[in-house]
Picture 1 (cartoon, rainbow, N blue to C red):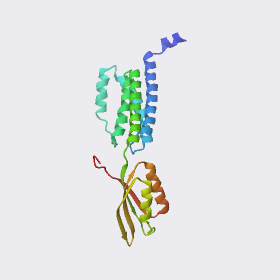
Picture 2: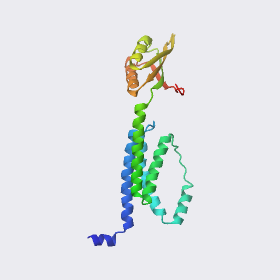
Picture 3: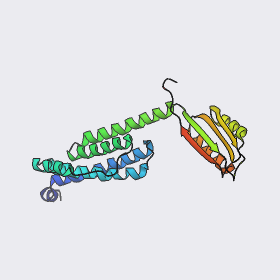
Picture 4: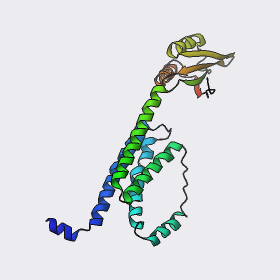
Length: 224
């Protein structure tokens, strides 16, 4: 049986299939890594679905053109007419795309041990940096503005200020406007976690379903 396979199966085909299988595994691991440790506001699960497709495609392309100079030049000409209609909006997305392409190039060039080691090192480094950043991250400066409408004119500014003071380490009243149409109030708070902010938003929605609430992050002055 071994002699049959050695005589009738091309070793290059076996190597190529192995590279594709390893590339698929690495791309899926990178996708899970991006969903868990990514910080972009886009749909990370949806964006991560293209990682296996890009990796496998790059492996096939590199495997085909690496043995032929003519094919390499033809590939350059073909790629020169490609235009991306959907721009990459965040640098993190672009960085993960580069990692995906690098995995495909490495496996397509038959550099499997180095590619696996490099991909693992990159993912572990990003995970460690993300964990360190989450522990050492400074509180967010937030500007909370609320406005009552005709359907809900009864915003208790003092009560909301007292609640914010108990939920956030820093809370300051910045502005209060009382008009015939309702009440507008603005607060500056520092939030150490998103759970605090989500809790306040849910409570405000339940108590004031007809009012408007907006939250804007304020840029921190360097050195403060």
